[in-house]
Image (cartoon, rainbow, N blue to C red):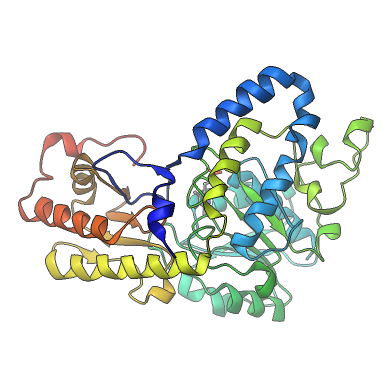
Length: 396
Ligand SMILES: *Cc1c(COP(=O)(O)O)cnc(C)c1O
């Protein structure tokens, strides 16, 4: 796989080593023209006709079909739109309704807070005696009992990169009659995901991280094909209706994945995502994963050899982590700010984690080595200890 060619498809500022694709992927070069075309030729010229003539109304499922092969899903099983937080809500509700006798949602403390908040809010809105059971990541397997209705997990931990074994946990869940909801926010485009093979029931994810769809790019939801006709939409928007343009007063869910659509798709964001997904044409996710592992191993080895001030927070075995690496560091926040000022962009997660993402689509071994040189310099010479690096921004 020639990643020099994929790198050329991204707009990267000169002098920047970008290691934060796990938060926001960089700009693919095809996006600006595609956006301009969508705005001027489609919106500008076609006006309302764009819904039919430019295929806007079909865009959510068309994009779903482009994402499907990246996550090991069949065509027609994924739709795109809304935010990931909303997709969690939809998937969890539908999953609970498939297991109506049970009341426990099992998740772990490594899950992303928004997933936990959405689950908490949903369970409260549903009334009754539902319980959100939050265990340590290592306890998940042992906590899958026949009391559990839904196992709701994020495959890759956003803080440490720790990777759950989706195949093993999904089959353990199924053996116990538990429905699964997987959040692929840090998986889609980063690691090999085999939704169809693992028989995962529901999956959700976002497209602004490793799929490079741009800030606030739409989320996706997957439902296993044999469950879709049973899946109850909690957000009964008109575009999830079987006959949206009949404008009837009662709701009837559409057949297939369409029932997970809610309202009018955000076409401009979808145009950007569509162009961003061109990068994946002809790309094999297993090649991406292999190169990502090679680079993260290089980084860990060099940092541990040269920077005794930091401590690896990610699993050491690359098969047990996603494509990001976290190091704990007492002054993690100012150190990261100093790194960013020197062009090495990662991010910081409280209380003291420095996070670095590794994707070969635009990151090279030489970038990794340059990042280690700069980190070493900053730590060794305490260059982080400047008042401007200690000032906390809203987004870290
Ligand atoms: C990034 C991320 C989110 C963010 O949700 P939005 O609704 O897109 O803001 C949610 N869950 C996980 C696991 C994430 O990594």
